[in-house]
Length: 137
Image (cartoon, helix red, strand yellow):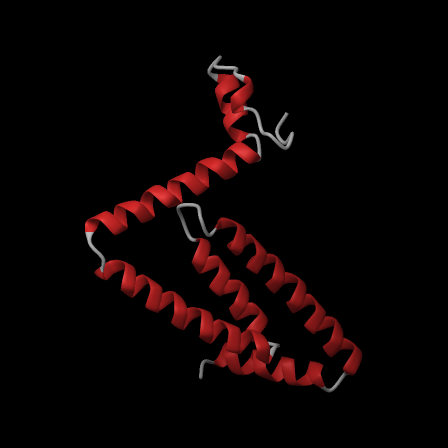
């Protein structure tokens, strides 16, 4: 084990001996971990590291909460299985997956008002491009 990891483990053990400090630390880990996890969940359909952010959020939570450790293991296994299945599929299913992902991205951008805003920058104002829920107005 690396020296910095041993030092961190000693500090964490000292915190466990102080109930109030331990509680505050666990609350801090919960807030940071849940924030990262929620950002990851929101970014899953977008190109980029959505799932990686989910796994980082769960890993942060797993440092203090056993349920998060179990969830991380379960989620990682299911993700690996799904990606393995998807890679084995033909080009049509993979293209359908890409089209579905693109549709989710465009729809969410439309809902948050980014499509209408972008079209306005280009002088393409049209009511159908505005968010139906009034965001980005």
